[in-house]
Image (cartoon, rainbow over all chains, first blue to last red; front, side, top):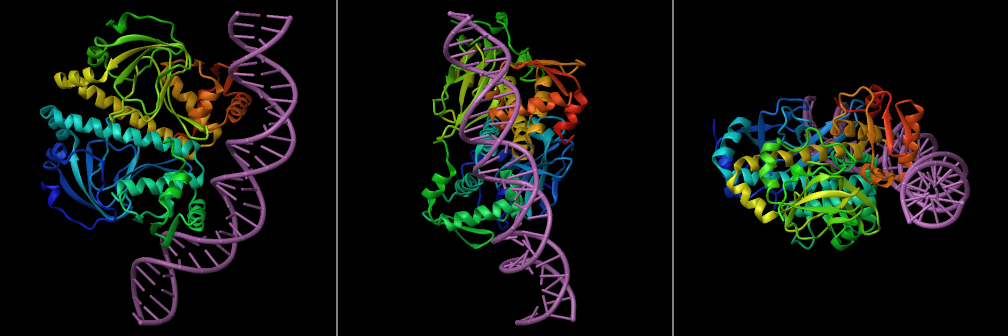
Length: 233
Length: 233
DNA sequence: CGGAGTATTGAAACCTATCAACAATTGTGG
DNA sequence: CCACAATTGTTGATAGGTTTCAATACTCCG
């Protein structure tokens, strides 16, 4: 069953990604060869070690890319929002697992067909290269966060990143719907849920944010948040 | 002045990268349009914020990709060895700086020409995509290290990674020439130089390694090192 | 040999993790 | 709609690993 993702309009916990992915025109050919799949919250798209024979395009919802160490420690390597492409592993098998953060819809793309399409359509190849390089840049800035920032800086950076990605950059008082639990945030930022909780409390106390609900963050002072994030720019 | 990098045989602090980069045949066209440049230790290939108008192929030596926060904290995002391609930023400007870890020789490639070459030669485009995806995978595993591993696990993982990259995987008692200072290692692993030093001492005490010289590591017990690294596999 | 840079080692401080208790939220069924 | 259980989030006290500050040793090289 082949469906064009453009027609799908499932509820989206996060607004569509802004500035991520590529010009829709270059990616469009991909959508034609995919199958829409519903994925329940916490369900797995693929496990670590699985054969990397499919790519996934997030249509609605959110997906995490994560690894669990033998003793249970977990780290998220990326978070994918609608429009993003999951599974850019050119190895034989996936080195990370991909799981739905919320009930999601994804477009499942056979890798073999994607490869064929790339060969026929150089623009698509270029688009994928740009995409990979973009994810690489994000990974590198996350390395700075994980290697050198303290808890406050990490959470501030995370929130600012979400503002950008959810297209609220222009809003004066952006409001974020987290959807993720504290556990997901903690594992993305290399912290514990307790530290994430305490750091939310600190940001609230500093009047950088309001927290009307654990899953809802209202940014009250973006400049303060930017100072707290200690970005290099 | 155009030079084929293949003819250059400068002394190489690290052996050539094994398994990194792509089949030489696919990358070869690149080398024809580059200029060889000598870069002294600690000299800069490009600064953060510089226009991303060149790529660099490491011919000999080693290059670090790094960012410095406003207050001086530093994080290395990648380390490039001979054969590796530096500067895969498709944005307007570089978001990280690139500096020579040791006296190095690099091939400087005008990005405009690389773009042209990609359009003429799809194989090259595919090779670059693979390369970017490979770097992405490395970045993701480094995120696990930075987010979740303790000092011992980080250093053990680092040493094992070097063994792989320097093609000593087969050797029973691999010997590593670090070239990097403790500061570079610390900034790559998200630690301080003191912690790196203490952790080397711990690995030595556990008989996992010998340290005949600060820059020379002899692996005495690879299995122990692998246990200590706590890799997911 | 001497001096600069680099590495090691020690003691104390600090930030985050861990352990624990409790509160809030969500979902379910009566 | 409420009661209850399960999940999720918050807050406190303590412990622990790494950082910081400081002193000393080692290595390289003129």
